[in-house]
Length: 308
Image 1: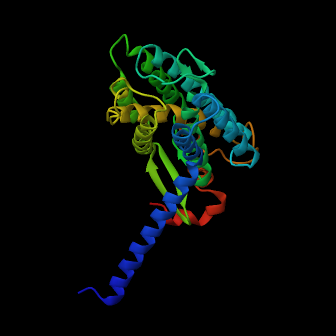
Image 2 (image 1 turned 90 degrees about the horizontal axis):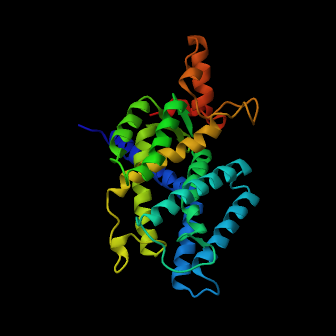
Image 3 (image 1 turned 90 degrees about the vertical axis):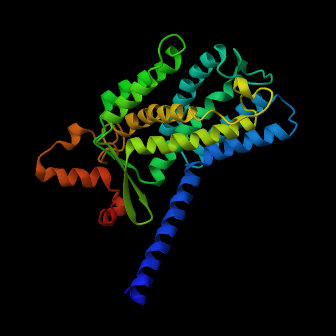
């Protein structure tokens, strides 16, 4: 028979778990501040008459947001540089996809080139902003990251977005290869005083799912339209979820490439937040110290006891 004290203990663990989940959700919301502001701009520009074309206003708005985030310290200049790299990579993809008819942008704009408004790159930059913000707020550490094969696969993912229009779609074999490469890669994160871990590949899938949901909101707000959404809005095909998961993995490589150089190119004396197999394949006496440096935040030194 379960005693009253035992039931109380179970109830306390349940309440603690709920509070941790709420804390996790709050950190996610704060990390999504740029995407939330972007969707706010999309909503306002759809339902409010503006003195200039919608896409021109959105470009000015996104540039202002980026500047504001940097001025108030929400993002560093290195993170802003990474975010603009996302913008350029996304813009290149947009220019191609619009030309082949994958989707379209309704409405005119002065800042529209080859059918693509320049603001469109900020939808990819929003993903980069989320990754940078989440990296800091969750105190992320990545272990056993294999930079070269992951980078090669990221390049193949980006290339496949173009080439599948002419040759066989290699999305599935690339995804399987990515799972093999990341099979031993873990991401460690902190919520409150507790430390958790998750397979990195799983995090890509989860983020990709929520990006698919965000894409549905974006098309509903007429930021862009797929061919079957021109006359009436329809749910974006679920297959796009897989494409977003692959895009997240490609996006992660850009951020991880910078993070893996911490302590060598900048913030000298601090450990990199991305550890590679070469960095962790050391003598047993040094292994504990390396894991402590790479997977546990200095401000959460006691969190190792709560790793799950």
